[in-house]
Image (cartoon, rainbow, N blue to C red; front, side):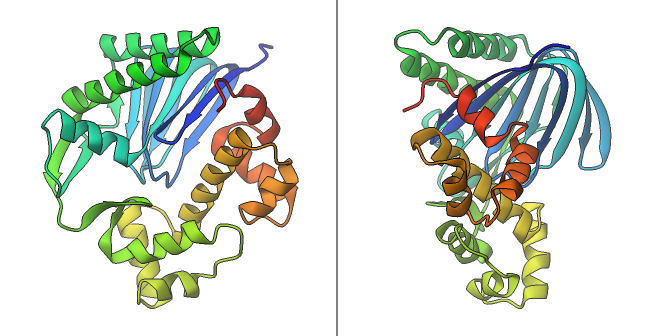
Length: 279
């Protein structure tokens, strides 16, 4: 059986995860970023919001922030890209697509073929595998091109008076205070009552509104934020797995490892070993 090959590149505005493995199970749930899964070889069976689809080599799966999808397959090679809302909106603004009060969404979830997008993805993977001098500048230039291509050919723009870009990402004004609370207190337990109180809502009404606006429950969203923070700590510090676990709110390293693997497909140690171009 093929030994999995993983390469991870993590920066504040975007992240890349290249994977080539005999068996793959990939998931995206409640991510605050835009996600693009670009398939080179193999076939993935995808469940996107309850719809069952199949994606072949050359295809792409595109998800807006909050989008949920599951994908699985055998002998699969892909590149998963996450893009922060600020990176996407900054690109849209610079090419004249949007004003301040606007929101960007993908036109559809599944792209059967896009030769230009596939070439950009292959060039990105080439940089991850080679790790040559000037990698950060080269990857940055390729990511700029990738974002602009997605905006030009696969996005819709609409005016939004309720969505706004803040220091915690693209959020609805009605739940902004609650999400800020989550970001500020990832290291401890956060009961639903406390999170809801930050939005001046009852737990029942808050949970319904949050699910409607983000596509995820408050605690599923919080779990994603914890995994994202853990990735940053693993990439940028020498903290032990146990220390990282505690800093993102897990009292048990084993529970942290299970949650991290479910979200990323890698254990924390394997994730750290797969990092390239670490700062």
